[in-house]
Image (cartoon, rainbow over all chains, first blue to last red; front, side, top):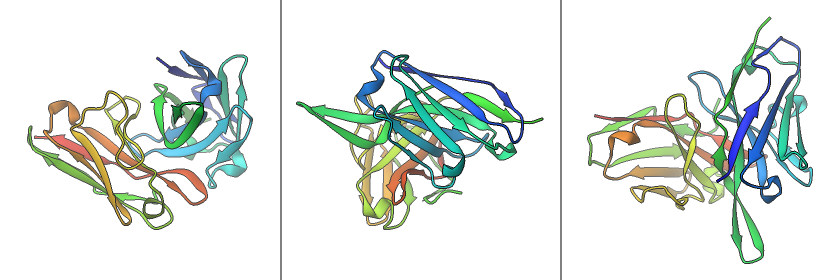
Length: 126
Length: 110
């Protein structure tokens, strides 16, 4: 059973860069695409971006100028960097796996996320 | 702010059925069969309940069902149980985005 675990600083100063890592266990990171999602306290979910192990990525257009995602297949990890943070970036950050259905030798990628980390709270404050 | 809209809250008694709606546009819900639904209990991570409009992942009770008509997707919970009390978020593939979420609907079991 796949497990995802977010890690990183819980407090980041305004204008600095938020850096988080998601460690995947119980599955190879090469089997799917991987996402970051965030949720401000008491509010809804916001998709941040997705990365594949080939290195291709897609980002939320509203965050694209500040987001960089990377993957380290040797460690079964992927990472998020969000630059120039403000208080509006304070949220619980989740990592999640994209749904992949394997039929024979073909992998079908679906627009949904079926495994999530427990989330990590990041506060932006001086 | 969300591109999708959801009713703020719905409620029902145990055993009843409730339906949550999620309205978008032809650029998201109406244009693609890629609507998913997530259940979130307080302090917990979201859990996938439905994907591709109406498909249930393994382990999700068949009390949960999804559908779509034009620009509106729906999640129906039949035979409501106490543990179904949670927030439910719809999500859709959208033009220029991979995933766009609704603001969430709070389901209360009376």
